[in-house]
Image (cartoon, rainbow, N blue to C red; front, side, top):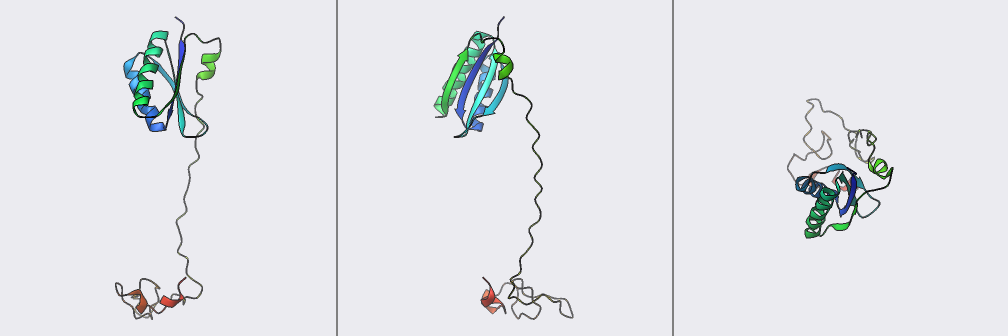
Length: 151
C-alpha cells in the first residue's frame, strides 16, 4: 500500500505538539517530525500513513488548531511521487552546544573606599562593605559613608 504525506502548519510549538497528539490518537499514522518554519513562530507537523488515516488525522488536527486560532495551513498529498517521502523525513538535529554561564562579579565603583577588614573582621554595612561605616544592616541608606558616591 502506498504511503501518503500530511502536512499541518500551526502557530506555535505548544499547539503543534498538542495537534500531533490529537492526530496520533485519532488515526493510525506515523509522526515524521515537527519543523520550525521561518518567521512568526509557525511549526509544520509532518505525518505519514495510508491515505484515509492521514486525511482523517489532518482534518482532526486542523479543526483542533482552528478552535485555538492557530491554524495556518494543511495539506494531504495522497500518493506523493518518488523521493518526496525520503525528503520529508527529518534528519537528526545537530547537538546544541551547552551554554556555560560565568558567575557574575560585583563591580565596585572607583570612588568607593577599598574594602579593608577591621581588627575584629566585622563589616556592619552591607552596602559599601567598609568596616569604618557607621551604618548597620537595615538602617537607611543615607547613613552610609558612601551614599552620595554611588552612580
